[in-house]
Amino acid sequence: MTPASTVTLLYHSVYRTLDTGDSYDIRAEAFEDHVRIIRDKGVRCIPPEKIVNPEGRPEESGKHVILTFDDGRIDNHEVVFPILTEYDFHAFFFVNPDRVGTTGYMDWTHLADLDRHGMSIQSHGLTHRYLHLLPLRELELELEESKRAIEDRIGKQVDFLSVPGGFYSRGVMESAWSLGYRGMFTSDPGIDRIDRPAQATLFHRYNISRDTSRAEVAGLLSQKMGIRFRRQATHAIKRGVRKALGTEAYHWLWTNLRKYSR
Image 1: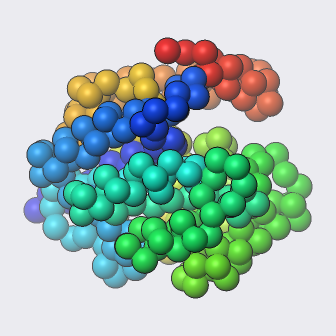
Image 2: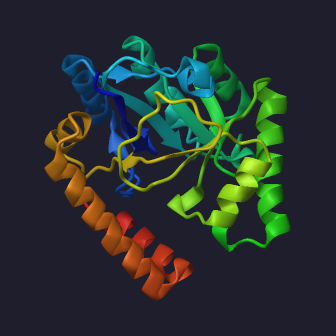
């Protein structure tokens, strides 16, 4: 039997009318089209509980997808949630507790509503600081306080971390595992096998932006080698630029490129 293989897609904001100019924000029509592609291709959208419970991870062969949303913007409840519900799909929502309820972000009522309908609320760090740059104690506070706040307000265990900016290090991983996280979602492109239970899992993800074509999304879901290779090559180039410039300069450059790209 061919092992179960999983593509994880990373989204941020999905808008109907407001265009922020950020290339990470995509239109609702595009997102719903992606959901239809998943359905029509017969790719299995894995419910969060199947990932949270290692014993429940899919054993069947074939292609699977995990849907994830970073940052906890208000459109995740107003726009994304109804689309997911219509197609009976579920997703992970990674939030920063310090941003919850502030302008433009979901509040705890929104997050509780998502949770009641089978979505999973997980950690994106406490404040969205880049974890790999923090001293050990501050890193631990970011991870520990975020985990505790979500668990206290949602009433369910937080098992997963999405690293802000996609930046992480061995120290970040070791701290996350020691504080009880069982998996970490990165921005590194790749395909995962999740049919084997693991207490410490590193998940790859493909970022979806307004520049991601319909054909590319379909190719990623079909796990086409050419598209995967191009994504990995682009990621390697970005990693090289980040290493040369440093994280802060790279972030400034990339943020401005995202903001003004069309």
